[in-house]
Image (cartoon, rainbow, N blue to C red; front, side, top):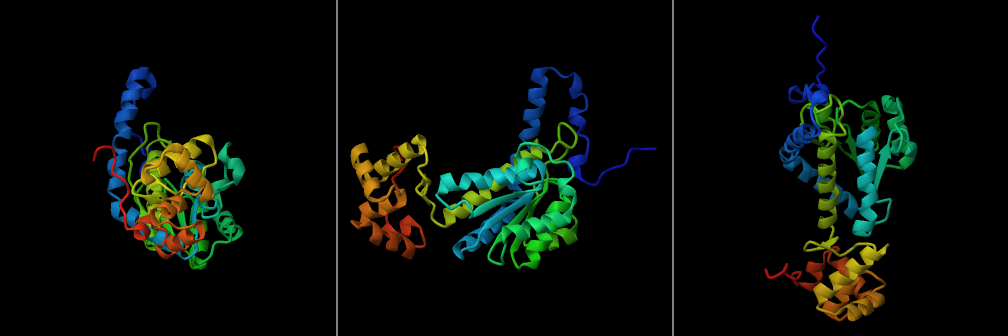
Length: 308
């Protein structure tokens, strides 16, 4: 009798790695690199869907809503990782982007077997997080079938939240129709069968990078490609804040530090204060009127890159 054929591509055996158990270290590296090189094309195939996700998340942010991720295992950890990187990068509150993982915080460092198998746990996690109709929930499930994620999406949908699904294998039409956006970069069989921490995990990380970075750019968290709403929580970020103000405002280090001090350490506020000769309160009002986007406030482009 032939072996059962799983419909999930992430569970298929990869013919190119069938003999990997006797491969040399260099052969393993070359094989994995060749497989990983296919991931960007899979992600690019979903450009329109990723853009729609950015639109949904931007609208949520502008209405005071939040972005939630829900996933299990690697998928859940990647959601938590992306959420945790938003506050230092974009200066937002930790509640603005939140990751929910099956099994709770303990699952971040140790596998919680069986935690993903109960849809009711996904629904309970959404209720516990206080998801509302202002929010967006993106379920992350490389295989597309995780019960925890399905339960979370169903609960969020019932609450009126916008919903999205990120998977790496083709999905049933009714599942796609049940969410506002389905992002499906099909990455194919893994080098090690079923190990979705590999290509599927890489694709997931790329997509999450695009969604949060894109939405944050849209609400004014950058000036050109400069990180102007970063939170200077360590020496590296303090130095970056000073260098951004030096570059944008054409100031030396001491003057940039003094301006940042008057601006309460906020780079965006400092730039507007300098450009329009405003105090901190007036700069904040101008930024709010411009929807958070510096260029709409100062009417000036960011400085060119290098000699451009």
